[in-house]
Length: 426
Image 1 (cartoon, rainbow, N blue to C red):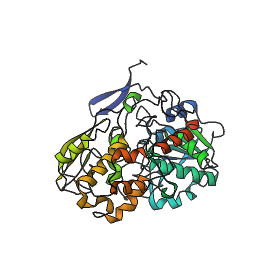
Image 2 (image 1 turned 135 degrees about the vertical axis):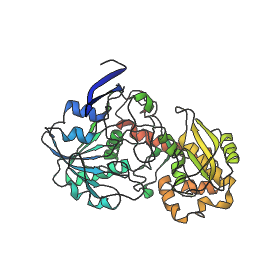
Image 3 (image 1 turned 90 degrees about the vertical axis):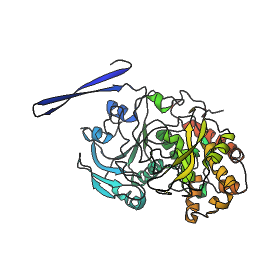
């Protein structure tokens, strides 16, 4: 195998009288995934012969595009007996509330159950008879995404059922040094805000599981199958790993940055955050916005790593479906310096400043969404500060001490020390 690439040859498809041979060149990644290390080393002690379940989705692939489901199903030293899928389903094709609680995986014949929405109430009883549950899902690195909520929920349920819990670790696509936003307040913990941590938290799923076990004193037998070769200062592109869309609106790894910028505001349904367009989360607009005026205001704020271009777009579904929206396309010009949370706050404060008559943050356009917005924010202070006319940088600065305190608390639990610029124990 060369450093740059390896050639996978021998996939031959024969039609009548015709032979088509497909050669796939796969760049050798710099990072080795948890699932690959597990398959190479075998199950840890005590799990040989175990009956286990797998919580995964379409992002559960190795670097050669092989499904974790298939890799584990074919093992002889353990028996895969049940599959669980998070929000958006085990194939990642479910949007909003359209979920199936029970189905059968076509390839393996194994039953698949949802752990999202109303199906969560049946999750614990479905662990009955298992020796272990494995978690293998690609995260996006921001608190509002529900996959890590499902992971924590699974840890707590496994603790009660005395089922071992394994995490096949994966890189954080926002990197391992980026910590931004406010630390969630305890009274606002929900499935869209699973723990008292910043909105952008810089941990891998395995690190998060290790910290949350200690933080909440969860009596679960936890094993993290770590990454090899991952540095905290890596961008996703630097890992050499393929990106599989983690959900319907995260087609590329760069979208993970944009989700932080527009996803929170999108909870209000007062503007369209690019959902329903070919560039989800990269646009933000509404029919009543002046795109040039908004772009000029945002660019004058000099948010690190971003440029806001005046844009016009028509969503095919979601907020303002089939209406012409004016707003901005959000260009990520420097991943290393980008402050995604400040960009998010800049958008919200700009809309309040430029369009006070819309009373967006008073619930004028969608009053039923205020509660969800504050749960995703993880605090009620942000909405109050916007209404008080504070700037994005003023709002963000008040959370500096909380972020630093959280970093110090989490630092002893980080697994990956290479490239560490943030999680340092004094």
